[in-house]
Length: 181
Image (cartoon, rainbow, N blue to C red):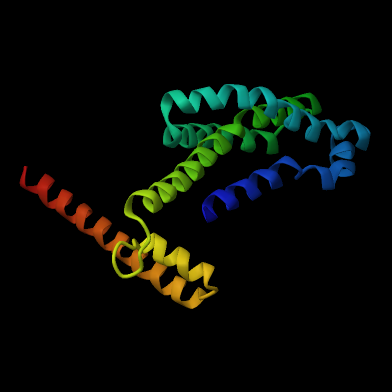
């Protein structure tokens, strides 16, 4: 969830990044600061058709591929914005950024909603009887609800360590298996 929030904050920053420097953009491209405001408007308005594109595409190709594809498209477009040869190009490239950005949110929101659904499913299926059927995720949740952030953080570190340990083990086993093949 922290990654999702950081990504959303970065998107928001990119959306409005030109707003603070509209006079400089106007001076550089020979337009008024008011007209330079099109760099914000074009991006924000392009988000609307972008969501119509990325939402169904995310359903079709999956959350992970949507995030990868939209990220892969957003980077070169953002670099091109920095090198726009004229004001028309700048506005067009900012609009293109707006078309691509919803792909990040489509994948991120779906991932967040799936995580919330998994949490609910864990609660419903495994139950939450402390000491008997309590999962680690539910134990962390209970600690946070009891305002025991130190205990919640300790459990989160344990859970994260187990995850990284298992990931390391799987990678080592795959390397060993490919070396023997």
